[in-house]
Length: 328
Image (cartoon, rainbow, N blue to C red; front, side):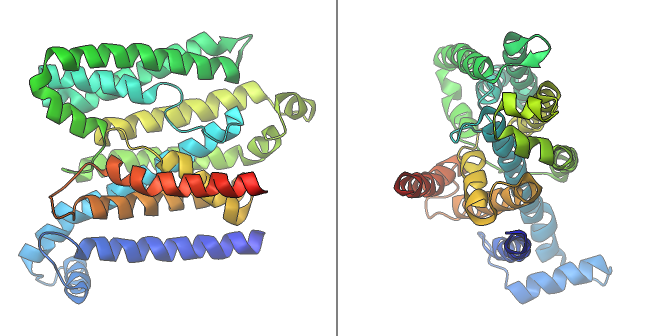
């Protein structure tokens, strides 16, 4: 299984590179792949590239492509942790109220000033997570079943307030709807920088707890009997993934199915070991979101929210995986 995991990881790295090059080529202005590679090379060695082509590559498409890769990695690693901690195959990064909190923050931001949307979305996403954690914490440990119910309750409350604000100011409906469905339009290098730092924090943390997460698949009581501090593992991994998911959502809106489907695909290929899954699942998420975003910005009708594309791709994949699971 390990050798298969290494081979699949290498394949995913090559696939990410190939999808990146293809995504650089696709757009309103089609730039031949040899021209893209030549301009990247000439820019790196400062050898007088075609500045029009370089501007499109480095300031329009490249930040968006890298952001898609990084966001996909964050959603996938967060979904993996959620499914493991809750031992729930339908767990996704938004189970603790992140999405509804971010939606409320975005709705308030669109009422005040669009420039405040990312900051308010992040703040309210973390507020929702904080309330869910506070409710579910008992005896120094997070109770998974209470956290799920708390997350659902907080989600309904925040969603209700957000819906009311949207209803009051329906002239902002299109902007809010576009944000709620997710999109990477207007990606900047500063956003890439912050999300890159988030990835550098999240994946090493999950890898550090890889053995504990493997043991926790057997259940909390069994894990405790084997010496695992389940309270610490839950608190650290869920807080870290909730934090980075909140940051991701604040920049690009709510993008569904990536965090739900990517871990399942990874498990089908490399098994349950988190040592491999913590690398494979993020790479799968990166490619799913990158392909989805490339399709979203290349439709004949013009750009559409990427959340629509991820739903079209993710739903059949999830149905297939569930069908296979039923037959086993």
